[in-house]
Amino acid sequence: MSTADRTAVIAAAPPAYAAPDPARSMRALVLRECRRVTRLWKQTILAPVISSALFILVFGLSLGNRIKSIDGFDYDVFIVPGLIAMAMAQAAFSNNSSSLLQARNDRYINDVLASPMQPWRMNLGYMFGGVFRSLVIGIALVAIALPLTGVPIERPVHLLVAVLLLVVLFAALGVVVGIYSENWDHHSFINNLIILPLTFLGGVFYSISILPSPWQELSHANPIFYMVDAVRYGFLGSSDVSAGLAFGFTALVAVAMVAWAQWLFQTGRRLKP
Amino acid sequence: MADATQALTIEGLAKVYDDGTVGLEGLDLEVPAGEFFGLLGPNGAGKTTLINSVCNLIRTSGGRISVFGFAHDSMAARRLVGVAEQDPNLDRFLTVRESLVYHGGYFGMSDADSNRRADEMIDVFDLRAKADVRTAKLSGGMKRRLLLARALLHEPLLVILDEPTAGVDIELRHDLWNYIRLLHRQGTTILLTTHYLEEAESLCEDIALISAGRIIARDTPAGLKRRYDATTLEEVYLQTVSTSLPAVMAAEEEQR
Image (cartoon, rainbow over all chains, first blue to last red; front, top):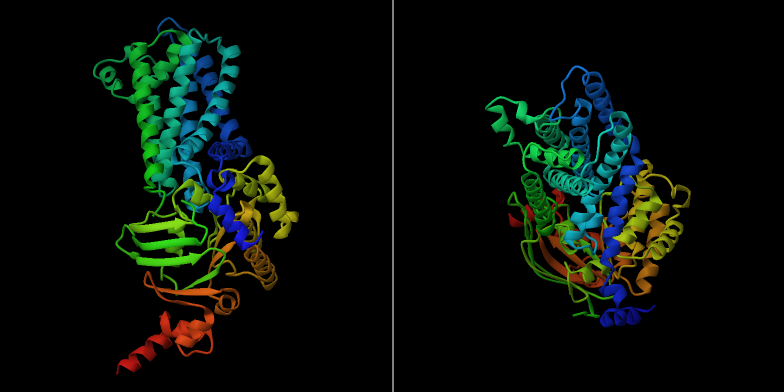
């Protein structure tokens, strides 16, 4: 094609040039993020599934005989929802924060930032990797826990909503931390010194109703408590606080996290000098 | 509104980094469609800042950029630009082929088109033997080849090459320029930065010299040599933008 021909093509602005298919752009990013998860499956899927399964075995089956039932459930059944929620939350967070941090460090994120992809599609595309990884881990853990403990799924629709809110929240948090982190220490700091302790103190291994004052009241200030409680409601049909409060709070934080990540992609702050 | 005559129009472009460093200061530039355009200047002059501004990789502080008449941050403009950055920035989790196919996807191409173009680029840049190797395991030369292949995959009409031959062997340099010349003959606009002045002189129809974030001279290679009474582009460069020690000493001598 001659120069004149090509410039004529531009002048006419045909769809191939003027309107690249944005849905394909996001699909490519989603597939890339999932590819990273499957390529590193031993680290991204197998390791967290094994460690959570060990928690169920060690805490549930061995200690379960020595601990009285909690809220009318055997101890090994009681801890399963919290352990699954904890594994999924950590997977969604650490997947996205490490993926974004790596992409920024090596600057291959520029291939995405320069492309004809709207910021909201970039945001969702990067979030999806964590959601995918976390759902695979959740399904694997349910498949392991069901025959081992006989944990019921009393309210499947509530469980689905609770899990989706939880993974979206932590996937978005992972995107935010991945964008703000300057190095791997920052990523580890958030994971090991904030998320993990709050998860352990969020009622994964116990019901906060057994805690004395003021620990019971303080537990209500832990945002992860509501998320664990929402997932537990889906599994067991009972929760420490009302289901409305647990779901409402989790949804509110999830929306705030997605909005924060979106603002970063929209403005380019921290992503572009 | 599409503009068939100007591949790139930059008006009053400014960039001040967060630490106060001035990258660009009211830069104006026009690159006609179909031109092989060279941008020369010393390290820190603003070449990469200019390129990153056009490619939406930095937040500009002021000014306006349009690509074939489209605002540079529009989806239409982004589709028209392909960039090979100075330092290899390849996705370490992907193979050579995957890097190309996913890039096509990011740029809105169908799976069939992405795969077809990936095969073409793999052949053009002699990457066939490494097609299924992860990018982290490639040699420096192979990474450079892939970087160029990726920049050209979505058939951009404005190709930006930031120091594409830095640290590249003669064979690849030869192959690269042959292919870029072919693209240029087919109507693709090329914006090239290089420290190899003889390359710029032989390839570029028009050259701009940039220093301290501003364009300080612009003409054809012959026109620049005439204007500065020089026999080579290197002499022009040393007279205008070089901050090398001999140039600084010569300037100080002249002041005395």
